Length: 616
Image (cartoon, rainbow, N blue to C red; front, side):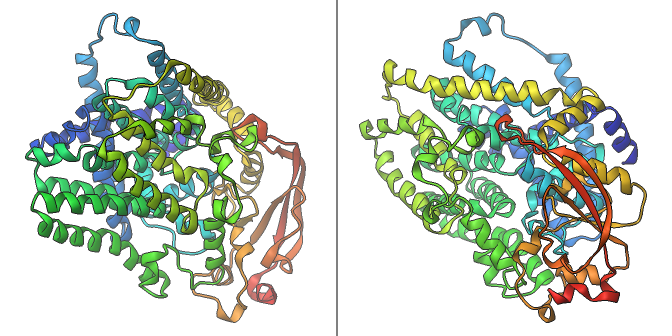
């Protein structure tokens, strides 16, 4: 473990190589799964098998790994074994590939303009994932959570940061990369969703690339696919099922697909999606309804019901039971709310998540679904591809009439109850494009097509700017450092703090959320924004309890003009260390960059001797 960690930190190119080897291993594992003729037959009705092998392997691994992390002690050794096994499969697959590689002569020269744009965009998305992880959410809890699971073999339980509550099955899968220091592993898992989508389009329509470009050129694609944020992978998994049960509904009834295979595969995909990101419960519910309808038509409703009940009880309610056994509260509440809202401050944190950019709460407006508020928020809009749905009104297929009910249900639930920022409408956007792609009589006028090339060109430019400004970071440690300093907000601050406290047994509480950049005993303090309940009602997993029960010297890391220290306001002992212009406000989008900020490290009082936390 430490050998690979040291190797990849000194030579980051090995991080990329190991990540790619692991992806080849997933591909080979998916190939092994497809030796099952019933699975092979089912998947081949949606796509060429090769496009779906990685998402198939990831879903099968995730449904196994997550219960192991939740309920088995010393599970980190099992994770290490799985990681090594996948790596070995990757080496074997690479050897097979090198011995059998074939290229179609002149294939690249016989394509149209849409194909060339498609090729440039997909290549750019692939290369942008060579970048070290620098996305703010990923540095906060996706990367940190995966690292924690790798080191401990379990999910974080102490509420040192409320974002720990969002760590789940996605981070459990990403943790496999940490054994080899494969930083880009999580990025490439998201990219496998793009591969899956390409395979579905290739099977679904001969008009391959224009409609697919409306998805791949969406500004939001940069946000969703260029970081280990577990969303696009599961979006693509659910897309597979939507095509199977809705678009290919008649084919599903006509052919003799195995009912057990259909039901088990559906449950694996959907439960992984919900456990990874609770917002997928809406699309998963819709797909479960479609599965029920299909099972009724094909006379396996009773079997489907019992299989669904078994899977949901073990794998979904198993996660709920784990939460209940760790944090207590009301078991029923966890079914409709993934967070332990009975704990001090968590309800406010949940409200913050739900209301962030919520359209019905005034956080955004409908125009911002299409056009970003400003260039700094370019990747937060779906894009002008939405206007293609004018062609919905020209379609006479009955599927379009039925889809109206799905569309309205999805949008209204998201609008009034969900975390309805723009990216949570992206899934229904993809479904609608797929439905259009399935139409045999769709003809889009050339003048109208030209309108969308504005988005194609703009997003191509944005993607390749990211490639040129970030992807070279894998070449050397100096270049990685350069990329991180210019794109990862907080990197310079943590680099300064890490260097100072290296090999010291101290705890650092940080006012900066990018805790994935820190080392040693580092905790985030964002939780302090949500604390309102008196100290005599502190839960056993609360941060105050956690800190009071520790005798390690504690410091507070601050930056800029941060003067609001929350519950630590009366615990400041003295200014321990400071540095002028310790870093700059930066981001992956060049239009989100700001000026320099100063860094401060405060020594905190002994929490046990002063009881200072209980006076806030």
